[in-house]
Length: 430
Ligand SMILES: NC(=O)c1ccc[n+]([C@@H]2O[C@H](COP(=O)([O-])OP(=O)(O)OC[C@H]3O[C@@H](n4cnc5c(N)ncnc54)[C@H](O)[C@@H]3O)[C@@H](O)[C@H]2O)c1
Image 1 (cartoon, rainbow, N blue to C red):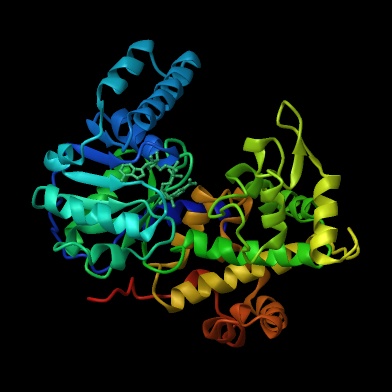
Image 2: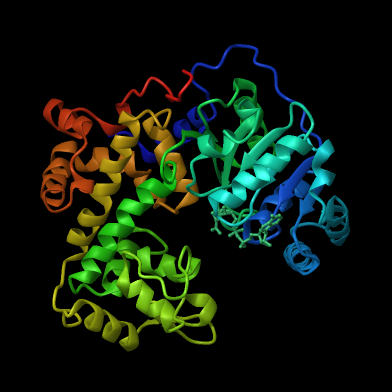
């Protein structure tokens, strides 16, 4: 059996290689960076470049939002200096590289602009239309969208070859992963320059294609759907989380939701596919930020299973709390095998360059346990036949979980997930 440390070390190296890139592709010169939006992501993204010594212009719509964003950055830097990570003078030096503005025209001399405004297609299209008018020739125009179609965003510009996804993870100044999303028209030198920049700001990059949620969040969605489905059938959220914690994840699906906020993509009065979440949000149980979510929290943010949540689940589902119980092993199989199946579908669609990139993405973006590599490495430990048998069961109830054709092939041939050959990314113009 392959050693996990050797495998991941090789996976980290391979992730930097861009299949099919013309030799000697020149890099674009990136000296000045612009970031649009000084919220959760825009602030963290700006810090990466200021820390690496590059000047950054941050654009906001209102002075208060700009002040708040810059204030958060200052506090973050100060906290790190107080902990002895760098000398006090560095706080001032880094802050001096950041220039806030309410005027998008200020981005005219930037070599790279990263848009990090609300996740709203119309808003992003308006911004990219403006960037197309304002930015100098050859500037890279990037979006930090989590899931929107970057081809559609690129299409509003007259320079889709310069548009790319730079998908940072929260908190963006801390998380190592950067998913670099190649759209149909993205030019080779834009991809190569983005990979090079990722290295300069200390990230681990993986090149992926455009699809719903890209690679990381697409795989995550299959896990979250299964976890929620179990709760709808009477399994308690904390039982699901315990199974994940035992597997080695620091946070299970519901612990993660509480941290991220249950109201991500939710609006008051909304009736989504997840009525339990809707009910908790309506009660202002929106996660750690409101002091309660799936769990109750004390003043030190210590969580405990919640009777209120159990009652909400019973009311919404009509199922008695704990009416259904599954072993930790069953919970893991139901949640994790669909992730492996989804990763195989991603390979079939050529939205990742290689299986080990999926493992890099899950190790550095989502906390996949270090001793288990990533979904592809772990899949090989379990075996394609066992995963196929579970997917046949789950797929019979819900076609979204139907086994990938390639999973069936691997099971029949005794093939390995880590040896799937995608032949590189497939986009519209290649
Ligand atoms: N929060 C996450 O965990 C996360 C992770 C990865 C990607 N993303 C993506 O990053 C983007 C930003 O998310 P966020 O969590 O930082 O949101 P946020 O609400 O914290 O920040 C968005 C900021 O954009 C500003 N803004 C809105 N319209 C603007 C405009 N026209 N010009 C300038 N500024 C404008 C707002 O004032 C706000 O400060 C979204 O596309 C989101 O999907 C978020």
